[in-house]
Amino acid sequence: MAKFSEQTFDSWKRPASETEETRISHAITTIKEAIRASDDLKNKEIEIFVQGSYANNTNVRRESDVDVCIMLKDTFYAEYPENLTRDDYGFTEGTYDYSTYRKQVINALISQFGENSIKNGNKSIKIESNSQRVDADAVPSFQYRNYYYSNSKISDNFKEGIKFFSQGGDSTIINYPQIHIENGRRKNTETQRRFKRLARIFKRIRYHMIDEGEPINNGISSFLLECLLWNVPNEIYNNNGTWIERIEKSISYLYNKTQNVETCEEWREVSEILYLFHDRKWNRKMVNEYLFQMGNYLEF
Image (cartoon, rainbow, N blue to C red; front, side, top):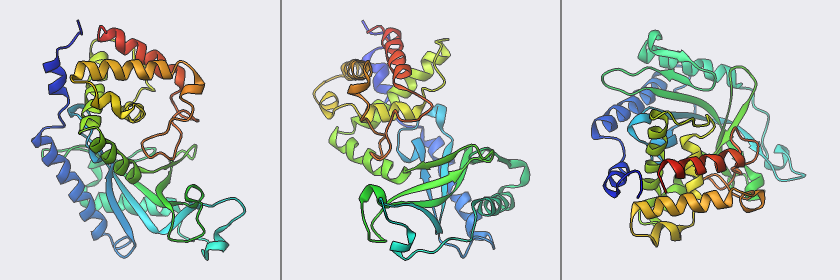
C-alpha cells in the first residue's frame, strides 16, 4: 500500500490558493509600473513577462514567489547557423551593455519599492514581500535570438529566448521561458490537464521528503522535476485511472530510462531546445538515485 492515499494525491494536484494568487498578481503589476515610470527605461522596447512555476501553472504554496523577466529587445544577442554572422542579417553591433541595463532596472525598482525592499542578487534582483505581494525575483535580460535552431536566414524567423549574466561574472545564462510555457500548455492539453497536476504532486512529494529528513540532493529542483515529467509519454498520463498509478508508472519509467546514458541522453527541457543532461548542475546518475529514493519513500 502506498504511503499516501489517492485522496491526498488528489488534493496535492491543486495550484496555490486564491489569496496567494492575488499577492502574486500584485507583485507582477507593481514591477511593470516601476519599469514604465523609469526615465531611463520607459522609451525602450521592453517586454515584461512571468516565467518559472507560476507562469507554467505548476506552482505550489511552498514556492509562491514569482519570477518576472524584464527583457530588453532594442539590443539583443543572437546565435547564427554555421558560416553566417550578424552581417548576413543586416545587424550592427550594440552599444548598450548589460551592466548598465541592470543598474537602470535596479534604480527603477528602488524608486517603486524602496531601497530596503530590494536586494541585488547574483542572478536576479530580489524584491521582498509584504502584506500585499509575495517575494519576487526580477530578472533583467536581453532578448536572445536563436537562428541556429531554426536554421533561418530571415531576420524575423528565430527561436526567442533570454540571455543574462551573473554578477560574479562566472556564468552566462540562456534559456527559453516563453517556449517552455507554450510547450507545457500543449502537453497539458494532450494529457487531459494531468501534466501540470502531476508536476505539482511531484513537487509536494519532494517537500514532504525534505520535511521528514530525507537527504535530498540539492540538484533536484522543481524545474528539473517538471522537465523529467515532460519526458514521460502521454500514454502514462492518459491510460492510468488513478494518481497513485500515474505516479508509480512515471517514477518507474523515469528510473528505468535514467539507468543508462543511451536511453535518456536525447531528453530535452520543456522548451525542447536545451538538452536536459548536458552541462547542468544535475546529472543522470543523481536523478536516477533520487527516483529510487522517491519510490522507496512512497512505499511503491
